[in-house]
Image (cartoon, rainbow, N blue to C red; front, side, top):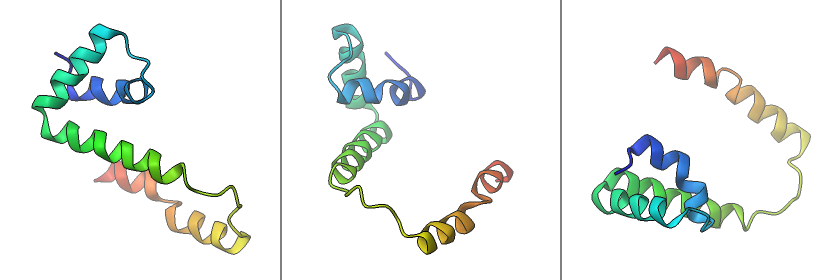
Length: 81
């Protein structure tokens, strides 16, 4: 069986239908037994569904600047915690 970490590395191939049969079966077995990975897989499916419906309209400059300011320290904060 695969680990949770391995599942996260394979999820894109799984959703694209690109996993070899043996890996697909191992993926399915893990998801069947791991509630956290089922939730992760559902979140990935919802993300793909939501992003598939977003427009290509660029974010205006003020919103872009506000987002950059808000998240500029995100990486360093996550490492400290």
